[in-house]
Image (cartoon, rainbow, N blue to C red; front, side, top):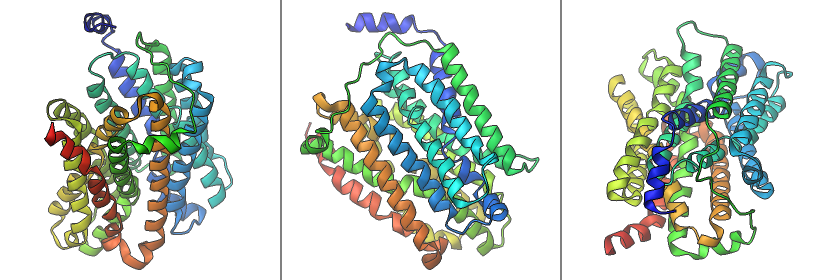
Length: 402
């Protein structure tokens, strides 16, 4: 398609398309941390151990990896309309999340419900990206920045529900997230038809595991992404614990849920802004800068327990802003540097490895929190940004050489 044809098709794109996709992505992504927002309530009411945060979060990630691989093997988003896949996944995810309302209290039912929820998210987050790509022949990078921002805000949203002024019961939070998710699915189905540039993916090719990392550029972007994933979800998962520890240490009352929402959600506008900046200076410098800032935050985090509350909260907002704003840049770089004959399979491999790294990081942090305490826990995340930046250097050098 010529650039003139692309611009003409963009003109024909209804104005509602991107806002509806963003809102639907936000609604579906609210499933990610629905369990984390109520984990303290479940520990109290269900008698769960102090490790509930770790295994509940890891279950979602493992479900997402399993779903991603199955969706790729079956090529579901190509065999069927992506918006229908998105719709069915949101309804299934809403039901899986609502399963917390009916299961017998206990760790095993919690893990099963969260795993099923993560599995359904494989038909929401990546498929939402595919739907956006079907409407944007040009300007996709900026649109994806908005979509990743919607994912970040959706991830934070359950904490906002938990923090509402009426002090809702945890059951109301679960029901609210499921309702919002289902509404997002209906909106996508009814208001966003398949776009004129619907990309046709190829079936997953296991050979990609042996081939894709031979490319130095792809290896650099992928390993930078892996370092990012070592930090991202573990920081999000343990943000409430960090806030609670500071509140106790400083004898400062804090609304843990509200500030968890603000800290995690701070990354949403940063993702959108990063997309705009990267269009001028490139994705690699933006990703490297944000990974460096978040890594520095990990390093100095114990010292911040000694500062006044206003400074501590500002520091956490900076951390929340930087820790996720490199996500769309790594996604763009991975897609750009993947071998052309294995793009879809390469991205599936990298995303799956990234979320498996997240599980290891979360479990490691969960196992060490009693030993290190929340004050020093986030030192465990420092190797991710450091190794990620080291692996990323070839892309930065290549850009300067050009």
